[in-house]
Image 1: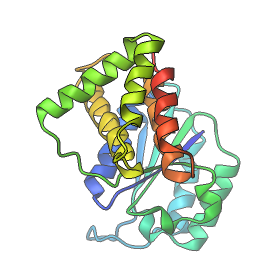
Image 2: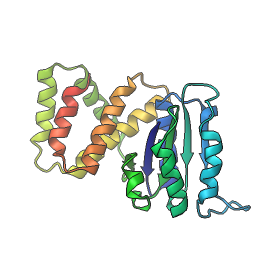
Image 3: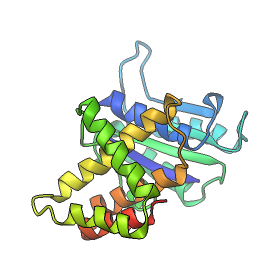
Image 4: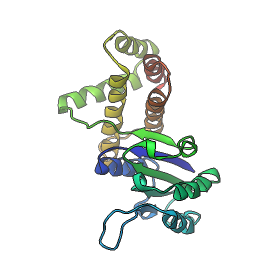
Length: 226
C-alpha cells in the first residue's frame, strides 16, 4: 500500500490533487472511496475512531474495476488521537492493493509515527502563471527529457548559477511542473511516463522534508529524466 498525506489550506486544491494522483495510479473512479466526518446537516465534525472502523470494513476488499483502490480521508485536521492510533495499525500492516490518501490543511496534525509512514505533499502554492510561462516550463521539461547528458548538465548548471534561486523557488518550480503535468494528464493533453512524475514528486519531497542541497537535487533530477 502507498500511503500519502496531502496538505493545503485550500480544501479544493488538496481534493483535486488527490484525484490527480488516483489518475496517475490508474485507479478507476468506482475504486475511489471518500471518507469525511459530517453530521446529519452536513457540518464538519471530529473524525473519530468510528470512521476508521468503517473504513476497515472495506479496505481489505478487492477493487471493483482495477488492481488498485484508493481511500481518500478528508478532514484529518479534526482527526482524534484514538482515530490516529487505529489508522496507524492499518499503516503498519497495509493491504497491497490500496492507496491511502490523507487530506489536511497542515501535516502538524498527524502523529510522528504516521508522518514517517507516508509520502508528504505540502501544496503551499497557488498556480498563477501565464500561458507563456506554462509553455516555457513544458519546453524546458521536454529539453531535459530528450537532451543529451551534456545538454542536461547545461540546463542544470544554468539553474545552479542563479544565486538568487532559493529553496522555496526551487520547490515552487517543481510544484508548477507537477500541477501542469497532472492537469494535462487529466485532460488527456499529454502522454507521459508516470515514473517521471514520481521522480519529480520524490525530489520535491526530499527537498521539502530534509536538509538536502536543493540545487544538487535539482541537477540530479535533470540528469535522471529521460
